[in-house]
Length: 98
Image 1 (cartoon, rainbow, N blue to C red):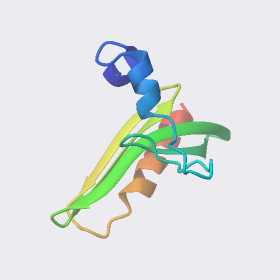
Image 2 (cartoon, rainbow, N blue to C red):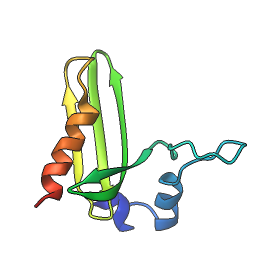
Image 3 (cartoon, rainbow, N blue to C red):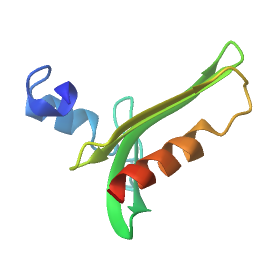
Image 4 (tube, helix red, strand yellow):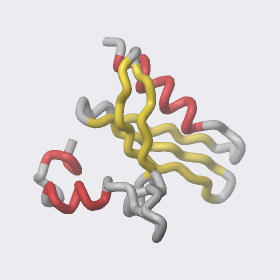
């Protein structure tokens, strides 16, 4: 995938984008520069996931990348209340098993 390959952005830039910001107290926010950051269980293994989701004009979208195995999933819905983030994780889980 281009963003993590070093072809589009320098590795140091990607690391900065995908590093959790910290509050003045030192607590991590779970949010990088434009990316949601979390660790989830996929296929029984703790897996780092970098993604972003949101709503625009009545539709929902969720995109995620698993690190380091680079499973990339994007889900788009034309209804504003769709749980696209959960659907994206379920799709990533299906690919992680194979």
